Length: 517
Image (tube, rainbow, N blue to C red):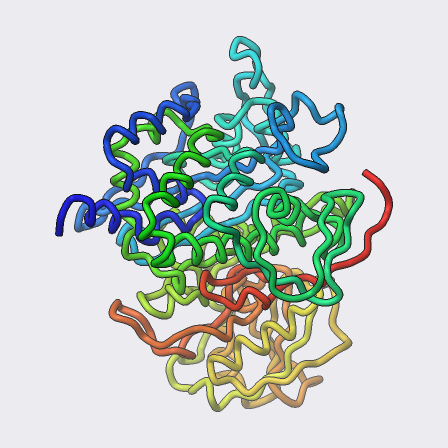
């Protein structure tokens, strides 16, 4: 294989992930490298303190990679319609943020969308416009303010404090870079559910239902639109953005795109001329190494999720970390696939029962029953939701069914449960214990009021039981995986999709928001 062919091979797959598109420059030669890399702006992370430890290599010397993608909403120097009024000038909020985790063995990846309205602590940072000024730490503030106040380095510091994950690199992409990128690849296919999006006053996006190939300004309108989808909040927009990125991955990694050096150059020129990265990522060797690390990655094993959240009771336009929030970061820190993901099924899973944000809890406070003598297929369980969070009984019933448990859903009679409880009638203690062994933190209790095993979901229920079931899980792969259906087929987040999922599925319905910006 000659040098040119090897360089093209390095591009395969890597360019598809949001961060990976910048790796297209790896196919353009040393001279063009120097020309293109001269366009990139850099920000040093050397001022950050109290950072998480860097990930250690595995037994084969492989190291996981964590890349933070920051979609800048700055209007300064940007072109295009519907970019807001003069009050937006001078701001640089991260309206779109994705943490890309690439597994050390380069077999799978997770892309976690972080809601801009998420209320989290922020560490002390240098000022964005004047590094001699200090942005004071905050115990609770909107996530997107970190970049606006302290620049991308402050956003990195906030994510590291929030997740305990060391960010290896960041990429900040502007409106202009996004428009030029989508034009360079010849447009990206997206899907619009009925009745279509009609948001002329805010994003400017007007698209009928169905499949569309969009680029340039229209693609920017699509990726920015929130008033025309879901409830008009950032959360519906995130789901459309995840669909868009998975479609972009498919387009950029297609044979036609990668085989065309002119297109590759256009991609590289588009992203590098409107890009800010950490100073370590500007290195040619780092770029090439990152490309090589993901060249075997398949879209089937890319999992897009939204960081688990609940609506802030004091302000429904804000969200707080929800059940499973800490579990996502724990799994990624440990380089483990998320429960229920295709990667978990194919390469082995850490889909253990974990309480939200904490360590594995004891299976039950009750004793005396064997954990192995009662087959799950012999259990008949009625599931109730003992919390104010909708649908948890339905999700738990579906996930337990995937384990072989016979389930049905109850609809009233239980509320205000802090802990998940399993009630059993006389003679079924062993069966109750077998069920509780699948649900971390569940408490087993006898009851003369129930005629069958009764599971009441409490606030401490683990995410792999109470998340939306993933019905696309595949069978055992080449790794130390488990047979499909032998572990809960639940994703860690109710809002998730795989890289090869049908782009028309799992999208919030468009709405007519109305009004003016």
